[in-house]
Length: 118
Image (cartoon, rainbow, N blue to C red; front, top):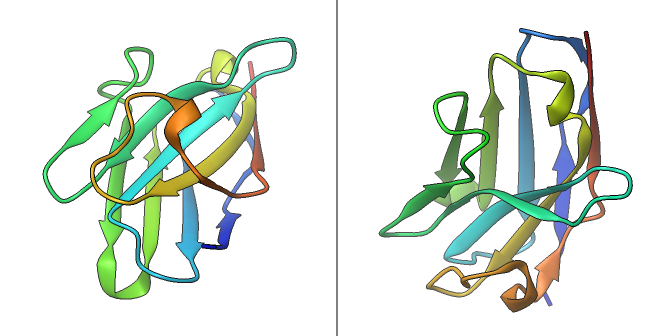
């Protein structure tokens, strides 16, 4: 079982930036970020594997996902943050290829809170 540990969450004003990190205890080809706001479903933010990088429509152009394979770490650089980005952000991982939806991921972190104030 992979163990995922997220870090980098916090509080920021609208327009600001944060960088999230997630380190896996061992290498997994696909790493992804999801988020869940109170009362809402968990939604995909970004995913990355050896061939493909994908983003949710609401974060395209503002967020960038990257992966450091030797460190088994995935990053999420979040710029131009908006209050609607406020959520618990979860890291997920899987063997290649990245699953089509959140149900396919077997490994999940505990989450890190991101709060954006207006």
